Amino acid sequence: MNSAINHGRFLKFDFIIIGGGIVGISTAWQLQRSSDRIRVLLLEKESFVARHQTGHNSGVIHAGVYYEPGSLKARFCREGAQATYDFCRENGIACEQTGKLVVATSDIELERLHLLYRRCLENGLDPEMLGPVELQELEPAISGTGAFLVRESGIVDFPGMCHVMLEQFRQAGGTVRLNTEVTGITEHDDKIIIHAKPGTFHASGLVVCAGLMADRLARLQGLGQDFRIVPYRGEYYRLRPGLNGLIRHLVYPVPDPALPFLGVHLTRMTDGTITVGPNAVQGWKREGYGVLNFSLRDTAGMLGWPGFWKASARHFRHGIREIRNSLWKARYVNEISKYCPSITADDLEPHPAGIRAQAVTRDGTLLHDFLIERTPRSLHVCNAPSPAATSAIPIGRHICDILSGNHSTLG
Image (cartoon, rainbow, N blue to C red; front, side, top):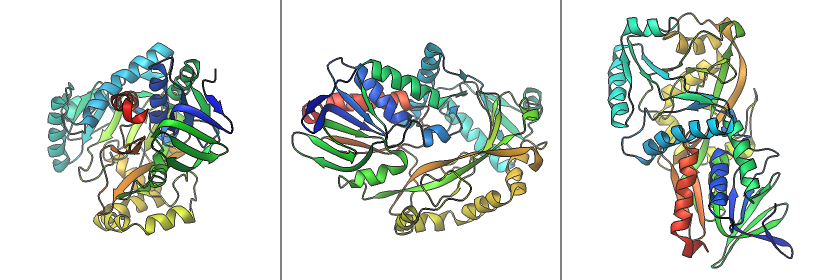
């Protein structure tokens, strides 16, 4: 069913969503299902959805361990985890509530572990604190000075969720255009025009969920002047098949609170394999998933942003460590052997990398929270850091609420 209205050379919709990742699809899906009179178009520049961050992450359903109590991020994560489990069980999508162990391996990490434990309680979780003996009884391959177990965490097939949502979006009357790259956005008092290759589309309102390209699309409307997307490459390995039964839970180190990364962790995937990673090494191409990746445009834009240099200087020592870990597998293994000493370099096999779209402000701040910028007829999700995939359903619902609350403005 195609619910668009054809006006000569362009198609007219009520809302256009740009971006076929899980946040964009969730928004389009919920918006279309909100009314049988609404006309929604989803645009994606690739030939299939979930091509970038959604299809290159660890597949973890986060419980809300790390986020500021009472924040939108913490609330969305808790709501999103339950919504994700419910959606997957209703639609036969692979998911499992495995539980997650956060493991400390030093005195300073043990102090941070207790702070995280209290944060879990404040966020409405029910963690179980474990000593070294209890930890090894639960996971014999894992050792540490202490840990806690969060039972609400799990694993899921996020691309599988996207494909089911997309089909339900179509069945509800939504329109999808793949292989459609947006080249311009023109906003008028009564409409917004999307220029794309190929075609031009008109709508009353626009939502942009462009991930790695969020800043570029924002700048098409004069937004995004105070941040740029800087790519950080997350490199993964997977354990050789003989070690697929090594762990039963997800296993994470205690993160450095100064960084928006969670450290190298062990993740038991829905297909039974165990991935190791990711690290967070500087990327030189926004969509570079191969071994050697470089884009002149992406690199020049990044080097020309003052926030990049300030962030790099601020986190110089960490950045050097990540580069070393990337270049030498033995150093990468050191990150894991702190809590899983039996793993050796020979146990690690290649696995696809991911790219994190990190919004960096002019003063070098790495934004930890969601960032939304608006015009009268558009809403741009400029930064959607982890746990955006877990939170995709409540984020989409929140965007729909914003649009309905401003219906007179957005037409």
